[in-house]
Amino acid sequence: MEFENHITHYFEREVGPFLSICDLDEAATESIIEREKDAETGFNRYFFGKDFFDYRKAADDLLIELYEKKFRKKAERRPYFAVLGNADVVGGLYRDPYKIRIPLDYFADFELTFMCPDHFPLVRLSDTKVKRYFGYPLPKDYTEEKYPYFGKLLTIDELRAQSEALKIDRYLEENRRTNHWYRYIEAHIWADPQDMRKRFSDWIEVDPEPWTAANVSLLQNYKEIRKYNKLPKPPTSRGVGA
Image (tube, rainbow, N blue to C red; front, top):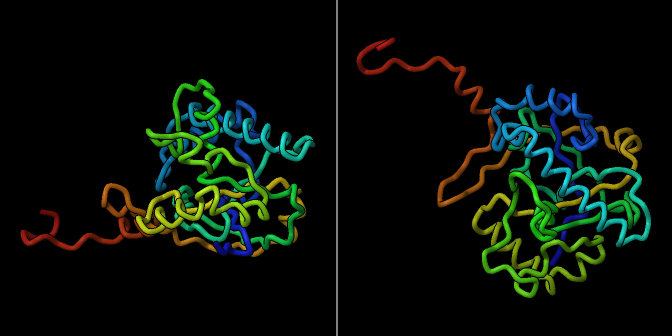
C-alpha cells in the first residue's frame, strides 16, 4: 500500500500549532474547559470537562511508555499529534481549524511514529481505570489475532513494510469506503516544536470534511453553519415574523 509522503498537523488558529493540552497545569486546564465547553465544533471534547483531560493524559502516558520501550530512550517531551497524509475530518474538532503539512523526510526515525486507528485504545488495552472512556472502542470480538494493528507503535518504514500483515490496509479501505470518522493513521510528533514553528509557517485554512454514522452524513464544517445561522431568515407563507 502506498502512503503519502507528508503528515498533517491540525490546530486551533487562535492558539497556534504544536501544543499539548497535557502540558497545562490545573488552573489552565479549568480555564480552557470553561472557555471551550460550549464551543460549536463537530465533537466538543471540552464539554466533558476534566474526564476528557484525565483520559487523554492516561492515553498519552501509555504512548510515551511505548515510545521509550521502543527506542530505549526517554522522550524529551509529550508528543504532538497529526495524521499521515490528510484527514480534514479532524478539522471538525476545532472552532477555526488550520493545518500545517510537514514532509516525512524532515524527521529522524525516532521523531515520528504512527498508530492505527490512534492511541486512545491503549487505555482499554492496558485495562487502565478511568471515569469515562473516549475514542475508538475495541471491537466486541477483539483479539490481537483479528485486530493486530491496535496498540502497535510503528515508524514509517515499519508501517510501509507491515501494513498488509497488520491489516491496516484493509482497515483504511473499509473506513474510507464507509466515510467513517477514523479513516486515517495517527502520527505522533516527538521533534522540537520551536524548529517546526520556524520551518513550517504556512498555515492552511481547513474546510472540515463530513463523515457518516448510521447512514447519516454528519457535517463538521461549523464555520459554515455559523455563517448560515447569521443570515436573515426568509419570510414564511404567513408573512414575516409569523
